[in-house]
Length: 505
Length: 119
Image (tube, rainbow over all chains, first blue to last red; front, side, top):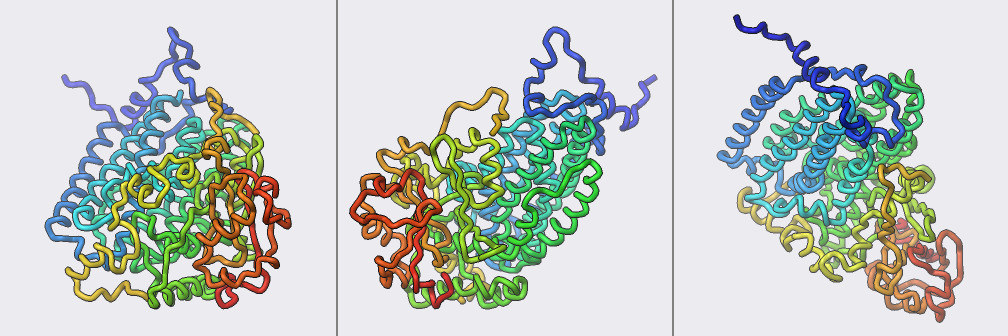
């Protein structure tokens, strides 16, 4: 008689509780050397509950079905020349930023969760992290496969992983993920699963995926749908781990609050790139950064922290500033990209009249007053043929590594926000109190930051001239500069005739 | 404040002045001229006279701005690392107190950017 088939719950229990044991030949602390130095106290790992109770066989089956569908769509997209249905080829600047700046984050998250999948002492948490490690690797892979179709036709998509390790603005996402990866396992999971995936991920995925849908990029939309069910599982894991740590010991609260403050700010700064993408790079924007911030952070995030207040967890520090900055950051970041557009791996372009009218409507308090004048000034220069990219390398923030473009939005939005501290006899500069606090808590960590501007001046980036540095990045001449007149632009013109969507204001 | 790492950190201050081949880093930002989104970073010899910074280094990055040629350098207000100061143009950066990773900000009274927009 065949053995009775176990139900899912029983199988999950055996998988997550039956496969771990108390070691005797080696001390448990030697087997799991990473889970104590952060100061998090866990008294009973068995209290860990994975809300999804996913077993390997069901994971395998479910993911295989999803990927079969995804690859069928990618195939038909390629066969039907789906790239010609885009709203405009300039939209691909967003995809170029995604593949170079976000896809390597997925891979970094994969490595981080693989580490946790080995080093958490609790077997339930290990299994959850192992599954997420596979998810993240799949996401990196499926993004590469989806976007590689565009690489056949357009510039700037050829070497994302090489560029992630070198390019000046890609050091922003790189330093973000490496900050988390070089932390202990509890901080890593707080950073990635909670601060990023639970609190802020909608600000990344919703604009990208609905932006893709608004701009005819069905390949990216399909990838987004495929990843969505994983993302909701990751978010649940994020919330679970926070509650688990908070319930295990009261001493954990201040540590978690500090991580929450830190990684909220880190992730929020990183998302400044998404803000620029959403408001400027998308030909058709489904919603503004400010609207997204109001819905996904102010409303949803507010409700979440309300819920977590029973554990004593408070809203992350400086969240009020982030909300005040929502009126500004997309314009500030797009301005710096436009002014240094000969050194970006995607095309920049000034907002059209139509786009500026939309920005005035979405940002009634700030766009016309502070930002429209600079775009109009540059547009005039372009018309007169006198526009030049700026000549110089900008000062960077020691922590977020973004050029120091942010301003004192609460007192004087035209004054750059400068912060500085000293450590070991050297000065360190920051864009905000949020970044300064992070440094001052762990200066020994952040004095090691690989700041691209400083590395160029130290002679570590291919040479002293711009062409040498760009070559070292593996940027090809056709990858950079204004969209108008680029290779992508001419190709699009050949396919579409006169381009009505993006022309100079 | 705290070192939170399993085995501590190796001492790796990546931007110590010795790594810049005899130069030191100096940041220069022009207040009320936000066409330049951020201050510029320059690697400069500490012995360079302040005048050299003004007449040889700064024009390369700032002179695209229509205000630049209108600057009356005698009326410029300088701020070094958060404190207002009066540079001695003939003395070196070092002797003016400009150190590694110092931030120099300058204000140009009467010049408030393109059409007075602080751009």
